Amino acid sequence: MRWDIFCKVIDNHGDLGVCWRLCADLASRGEQARLWVDEPEALRWMAPAGAPGVQVGRWDAHTVFPEPGEVVVEAFGCDPTPEFIAAYARQARTTGHNGCWINLEYLSAEPFVERVHGLPSPVMSGPGAGLTKHFFYPGFTPRTGGLLREPDLAGRQARFDPDAWLAGQGLARDGARLVSLFCYEPAALPAWMLQCAQAAQPTHLLVTAGRATAAARAALDALSSADPAWNHRHQLRLSWLPLLDQPDYDHLLWACDFNFVRGEDSLVRALWAGRPFAWHIYPQHDNAHHAKLEAFLDQLAPPPDWARFQRGWNATAAGPLAPFEPLAWQEAALSLRGRLLGQADLATQLIRFVSKKR
Image 1 (cartoon, one colour):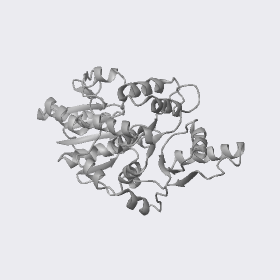
Image 2 (tube, helix red, strand yellow; image 1 turned 60 degrees about the vertical axis):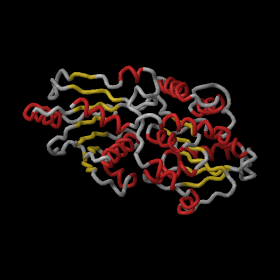
Image 3 (cartoon, helix red, strand yellow; image 1 turned 120 degrees about the horizontal axis):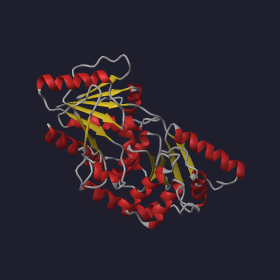
Image 4 (cartoon, helix red, strand yellow; image 1 turned 45 degrees about the vertical axis):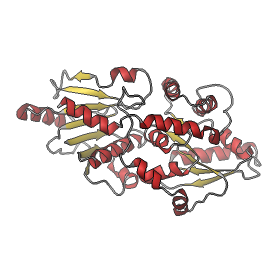
């Protein structure tokens, strides 16, 4: 089948990361995927090698779309252009093909996801009137759409040599616990860095490019202003990473002992890494992210101190940040990964769903 997947970059590239991985995953299973995105330039660093079977097109006011495919996916609430939908509807009427129009939603563990996953949404007006969209929710339970997981992921991970990869980045294990940092601007970052500076075991923090780098530099400035000797034993060291493509971001997560991640794409990759992590949920002004975090913790049931650490990282609970004990959380992370591996992945479920609807 031919899939037209629409994506708009909002304020970072997480949406595009999900859509690109989905396109590449579908294509690896013999599907044809066209990704329409308003900022395709980001794929130059995110996916510079491209992927066989995936076409990328710029989506703007001047885009001239080819004949629509059999499946339309509007990701994360973006609306394909009326002209494209009109062509899709016209094609359905003239050829009689039963296409499928998917509204791919954001990842959440909240209870409503199971209730609305797969529900139809008849289109009552506009060029698509008479057609039906279907909600499709990724999720953590068998009653949801699952998580993105490529068929070859486990094999690639099993063959991965962390020491060789670190050496290729100019890094090395030197007795310190390795931690990756990908975040927005967590208020708890200075407190966590101070914890590491006072810990018995040294910590080597690998800071990703962009907002995480800015946040870490701001935290360093704040700590040094308060106490220039805060890290006098140099128990915390930092390395600044360049932009990583998606395969190398996976490698980073696999190489580290703990990962700070944010948004949706990196959370899923952290789950598959089988390492403990902290999820920095995009903060919302109405504190909707509080309920989202609690639903995630309810669903995944980490040890209590790991859950407290996650709440502290997201500033959803009062009190100091829980002690940072990644080694003690490792077994729970592997158990969590094992449970999720028993669930059908997102691309598999999408293909099954579309095949039934056509």
